[in-house]
Length: 471
Image (cartoon, rainbow, N blue to C red; front, side, top):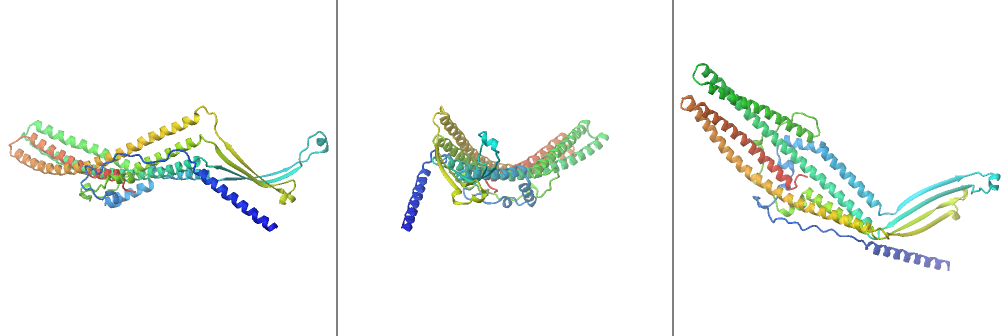
């Protein structure tokens, strides 16, 4: 008979467990608040400036795009030591900890306490009406659990997860920007080196002009005007040398900051005209941009997180259900602390909710919805800016490549013009002013050619960054 009763009690307990489990599942489906859906952003079917519609340069890693080993080593140092990137990595770790904190809120909390009291009251105290139990010992365990009826904790957990993904995308953005900045500054530095060399040669040539003109002036063969013009252009080239030296030091300083170092002269590798880049830079298709660019993905994760925060605000309008349990041992003596009669336990259910808050909860929801609109608009703006950056970079690559070709033709023409002008001047058929004009044109065309090549390389870096490559 006892065995039958025991079996019956077990069946009743199992039914209770099933009923409670089913109830919790039903309750778990009561989550309130909006569900996220990606905004329908406007995106083109193809890039208007693209030379080819297939593949993408982002399928190549930066070390495959930039074959200069010195540039590769600089990028690697920056990735290991850049302070902004290290800060972004630490931010990811912070987001992971916050996510773990929010996950812990969904589980029951278990706490413990131990209490021992010993007291001694004399007879006179007892006669005065002051008397307490003399000794007591207790070992207690507390269990508290807020049942997530309306999805408040789930929304908070999903928001924390989205913010973790957002911080990871921010790290990727910093990574890509870092690679691009190092490459841009490196190409700028090599361009400055080239223009410094051009100016140095020009200065030496102009000093030679000045020496010859001075000799001719002393012999009375040329006027003082020719002498003054020669001095003027020589001083102009010398001044330009100091300006370029200053720009080189500033660029080196900018690079060493990215490398997380104090100032040191930067080691040089290939010259800009020795860099090997593909003739046609593939850009892929626009739909890939939404999935590749970290800033777009970061903006979307922020929108997801804010959408979940709206759900938290909505859930706060409804009552919360919590369970609190107490289980432990209590006894006046240590010898009887572990006897069956010393066990104690209790379970308390509590339902608490807002009643009159004078619109506070409603306004909280409205505020979070307004924030979600703001974040949504920023997401759409981020997408539009991303497509614009790709189009601009593609246009820059094409136009700077064509400009560089035109500058090459210009340099060749001005070199021949200078040679003819010098021959005419040496034979007395023209003035020294024509030689100076031809020499200035040659210097300017060489200078502009160097800039066009530098900007062509930098525009390739910017396209690589705009397409979200490098990580």
